[in-house]
Image 1 (cartoon, helix red, strand yellow):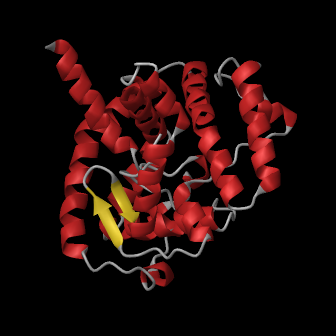
Image 2 (spheres, one colour):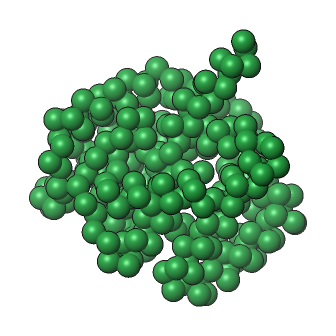
Image 3 (tube, helix red, strand yellow):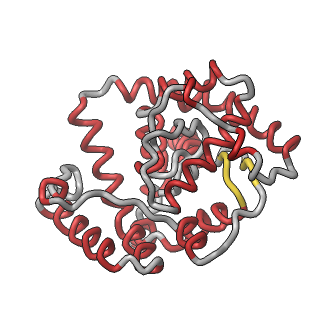
Length: 261
């Protein structure tokens, strides 16, 4: 019985992690006072806004009572342990990053990411240590949503998925593509270790959420319209990721939204 309850908790947390903050390239830290919505808001198509707002409210409550408290507890772990977990999860994500870089015609980046994966998987002890970064092989992030955008697929309308969080039709399609093509998850399932999949995504959700606790709370507390702030922030960060531009001046994208692991 305890095992079933634990599994349900993992599945619940897994849902949080499916769209939480993009990847590391989408995680940014700007002050709430720097937040601008007018230009971006004018370009967002949100025909389901009443429904989206209702789902958003539910997600927000779920974050406050489940994920944020767990993330705060995780934040108390020793820094080396947190770094090791974050590095390990990032390394597991790299094969799909390489695939998307190839699909986008980023030959040089795909070679570097492949080298990064091999170095960290060996010298970095299965990715626990980011040895590749010392060799100048920097982490880069690409996903299927970015790939589809590169191929000319439009955003579609904005949608807030229950527990999955802010998205749009294109990025939701990309998320599903990630779910069904992730080689690491496929390997775990083929080896009869399917339990690792929800465990992986649950830990990733907590790890990512722990990095933006203060930023999210600041945006939540200081935004006149928190829903609009998250919606605009989502598009700003996704546009920055798609165009491979420096997003250091953008606002943090609050919960709930993380790239599927």
